[in-house]
Image (cartoon, rainbow, N blue to C red; front, side, top):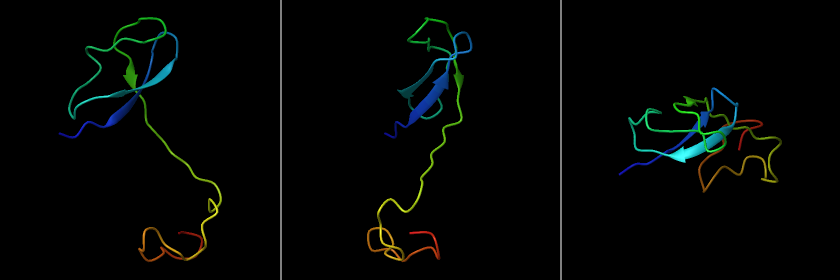
Amino acid sequence: MLVPIYEYRCRACGHRFEILQRLGEGAEKLSCPECGAERPERALSTFATSGDGGAQRGSGFAGAPSCGPGFT
C-alpha cells in the first residue's frame, strides 16, 4: 500500500504541517495541530537543491548516466 506524505496549510493560522495519507484521502477529517481548525488546505510541496551537493560533475546517480552539463 502506497502512503505518501502530503503537506497542508491551516487556513486559520497559516501553520504548515505534513501528514502520511493514503492516496485519494483529503482534508475532510484533518485538523490543524497548532490551533485545531478543521479542513486545512493541501499545500503545493516543493523541493530545491543548490549547487552540486559535493557530487562530482558527470558522475550520475547510482551508476546512471548524467543528464548533461550542470546536472548530475
